[in-house]
Image (cartoon, rainbow, N blue to C red):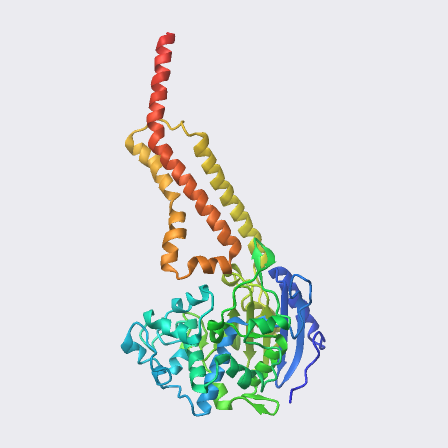
Length: 492
């Protein structure tokens, strides 16, 4: 039986200030649409949609589906823990007990990886192993994706270090599938969606579209544009579950109430506590990674949280366990720039939590809109300088003064060589170093990618023009000056 909660759009006394804050952050962050849910104790106390769910102008509601990105990892972790409590999986068993053919490039190391290490992201599998598949089309099965990992080289010893990688959770998704005897998606529908009454949550993009999936947006130089990107079923356990604010609020209730939702229990209190216990330190941060959750202090507030990112969606879920409040934020826009400048990630959800716990939102020096204005001005300045530089070389093609070879190298050849650095990096080096570099940049940041291509081509043109000029202009100039001297002597 579902717990009572307000109808979508109902403003509960005390939440008007939070709604106003969220609306202001949407304007400052150039966010097209957002859905918010707030849980307190064992009740959903506030659900609200803001902005637009697509170019047609339809409103975001509590039931509007969004891709939730890596929030999907906590669903996979929950599924694994359910199977542990059913006696079908042991956390400290080796992966090869459940997938006998599983192996990475190092066969011996592969045999030592446990289910727990996949959950805690301490398997030694590098972040890069999860990037390349995301850059592809998503048209493979979970088994095919895991079999492809035979070429993956561990970057750290097994069990030693936290390294965030989608690959860990793709393997876990296959374990769920093998052990349960049904597809990963069916398991999530039957064992998580159904008991939590998550009626507007999906493991299929087609089904979600039939029920009003929000259009994803990306920014083109600060203007949000609806963009379509491939849905990746073979990455479902790591980042492609689809849900809405109302359903995610029910999901939060279970995580905040020891696995219980109303009279339904989806996991024991001990199992839920283990999921939410951080054990692996995340870099130099104050956060630790548990099983699909991050825990620790964020600006003097202890939280259990996770963020989710797809090409053009962003999501956040956070719990303040001591205060017994939780927040879900779903956003239908994303980009690399938003993530790296904290334009979307984290600050709205944690600021809402702060307000719910009697604290003030943290001040921000720049809004995402202001960041984009600065970026656009820099782009205009750099592009203008490049065009001017190329035009100057062409205009002064035959005006290179006679110089010594040393002067020629210092004044012409070395500056010209600098123009080849960006084209070589962009077209040759970065694609070799970063798997799926061009695809990821094109999908996650299309505007800056288009500008980088233009900039690289302008740099290449300038470098080629400068090289030709440095080679041929001195001899031509010498001939011109010799002719000028002859003419001058004849005139005398």
